[in-house]
Image 1 (cartoon, rainbow, N blue to C red):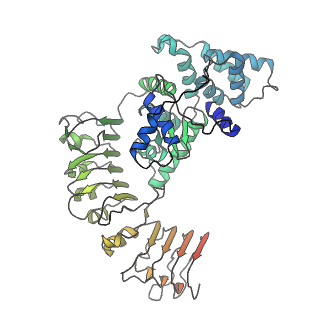
Image 2: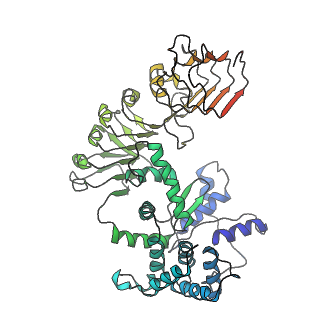
Image 3: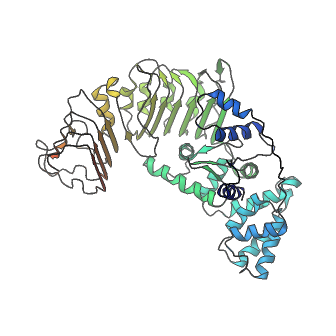
Length: 523
């Protein structure tokens, strides 16, 4: 409702800028100032600009007081989200709806989810919902008096969710800090670790289920979409109800998120993880500017069911103990320091996603280990402060695409053998201004014929590539690029796409061919 009002203000042009922020109870003044500052300061040149903006004191001539919804407004709000026209609603329907909104305490945050769960349902279902709200017994749930209307209404909405995965995702959202903006991309990795996406063999398929589940919660108004960057959050009152529900329904700890504020080092007790054998997702974040020294305790071996391990801002040193986490599917280290990427990581037969963002690896070539991880599907690495001060990204846009590898100018740092090893399993391959190699084609010089899964190929300014595939010395009848849907050639001097006989099913599924500034003699 508030979002709609904001849109109407924007369209009215009455104000130069309209800013939307969620106000928690009690209000988080610093967060409100920060949200306002981020919109007032476009592309801040430095942190001081943002700090100055946060310090602004805004004085308004008129003060607008927001009051509790009137009975008529509450009723109209309910009918609107229940998909019923006010004019076409029957007297009986309006009476039932009026009693429902009274049971909801005329709170919009409670009315809207209940209305949406009853959308397109019969009048008997409306009556059943009303009876349930009227007969709610707070003593069975140890609910305080001022919390009854919100709890029983949102509990009804929760119970009416027909998908158990959606219910579990709803409870999971409540475990994050209040007013926390959560990217769906990151949320997906945690959900996979908790097994909310089933046991799909393909990481991409498993993760693709998360946005669909999340949007069911958004559509029911139990979850809020923050912005177009695909971030979500939970209203503080909804979060509190979800936590109450979670206390009743979740008996065993499977997800642990800890943010630790320490100065120089952090020593975890050796027995810390001994009894957490059911833990499936562990997130440890050091709330500090500099890395904190952390030694992983021996009881780390006890995490036999851990599927997602996310560590941020730690100086870890030796991490070979992670090789014992045989159920691990996702390992993400961000702003961490490690002695080396140990060979023990290759023993993780279920590891499908590895993230090494802004990590300092003191010695040895990590790619000699990475190429030996048997089922690795996704690699996310950002290498900070290399020779020319640039950052090199393997996955440039962090898109949700399986096995994406775009090496850019990494030939300066990594050998051709390493690049070929990574490209071998790629579904998306991007080569930009790749020079000083012996490669004159993509297949077979870079990618072997055995790679039948490539779906996108992008070549930009690779002057030494003469043709995309060279088949003169290859076995006939072998399918090549049979699943490729997009081919982009930009600034290329290739003579022809295929040098030699056309292979079986060549470009059979091609949907997009992009040629720009190319000199091609024969297609």
